[in-house]
Image 1: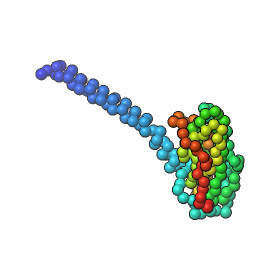
Image 2: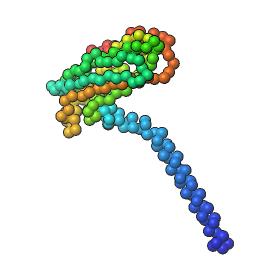
Image 3: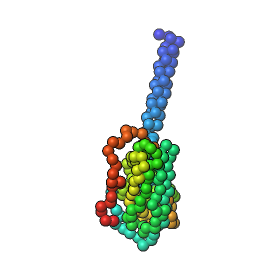
Image 4: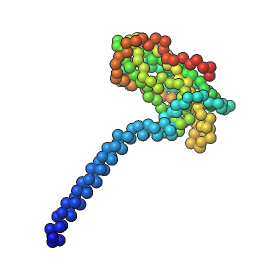
Length: 202
C-alpha cells in the first residue's frame, strides 16, 4: 500500500482519538459540576469557610475566663409568611460555655407552610469555632396557620478561637438565620409540644 493511501486512514484514527478525548473531557466536567455542590458543603463544614458553623455531639469541657458577644439576626425569604425572630438580640457567654438561646416563628398565613433555615456566622473566620449542639436548622419545620413555635439553639464557642492568629482578636460574633420555603406534603398530625426540649442540664 502506498504512503498516499495510508495517510487518510491514519488521519481518520487521529480524528477519532481527538473526538474521544473531547467526549471524555465533557463527561469529566459534567461529573465535577454535579459533585461541586456537596463537595463545597463538606469543605465549608470542615474548614468553617464562608461562616459555616460546626455541628457537634457533645458540649465543651473547657471554659475560659473571657466572654464573647454573640448577636443574632433573623430573616424570612419570600414565599413564607412567617414572623421569625430571636427572643434575645444578644448574649455574652464565656468562651467554651455551652448555652441555649431561643428563636420564635409564627405562621401568619392561612395555610400550613414548611420551611428550613440556613445560617452563617460573621466574621467568617469565627465559623469554624462556632459549635452547635442542637439547632432547629438541622431539620425542616412545619407550621400550621397561626401556629407559633419556640425553637432552641444550643452552642458554644471553641476555646481554640483565642489561639488562631486570624481569630484571636474577634470580640463579637453574629449568627444569622434565613428561613426558606420548602416543598413537600403537608403534615396531617399536629406539631404540638414545639421543639425538642433540652433535658440535660448544661
